[in-house]
Length: 293
Image 1 (cartoon, rainbow, N blue to C red):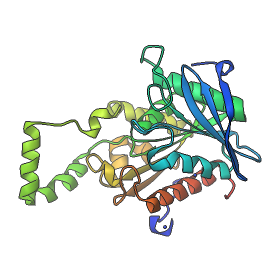
Image 2 (image 1 turned 90 degrees about the vertical axis):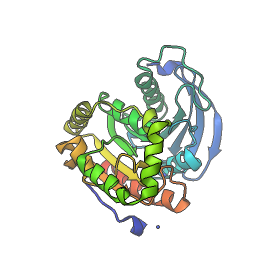
Image 3 (image 1 turned 135 degrees about the vertical axis):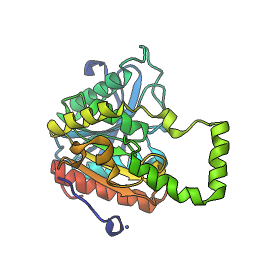
């Protein structure tokens, strides 16, 4: 269902047998949290409700180089909110990040292998059978890639995820800047000594392949929530751009879209994180039958 909410009206391949569980680190009336080591040196925290647990589990993936707590503890708050809705959540560090060790195997299929291990441990601990992958920036890239090939993925929440500049994007991006001499000069100087940009750290397929991947997910009835912020200004600046760059599948009922131009890429402001959490809560309730926290 392509549910839209007004943001202003809104102001939580390694076998499981190798996993081991440490003592519970936190308890609350609504949830309990336990730390786990699993896979090839991976470390994460499972947050689960005290009562009945949904068969749909949630994995929170690293955003760039941030730890499993997320930017400004966003993953901690999101995990606890989702647990209050009846979902078990695993927030974990992918290899070489935070508390997880560097991988013992070649990088090759590391992303798929590690997310598979995370699914297995969450299934073992909570009975989850299908999964929602959630990530910001590079975490969204990982969710998109794995969601396209793993039948256990029921949904994905992609924060500043994949999209591609279109002719309309360039018109909206370039024309206003042509009348600002300072911006034109800074652009020309930057071309002489180009510095690394965020796009250099993203892992996007070719556009035609991405269209096919999205079409495959929609055909499998995977539910997707795209959220773009002002932090994506260098490649996304209008709601219509998603369908223009990813094709007709982006307009299907399985795909929901938000564009919050005034928001920072990492949801720096608490009130913006609050809007994000409420949007995710509403989406999870509609798509996966969450209980109202």
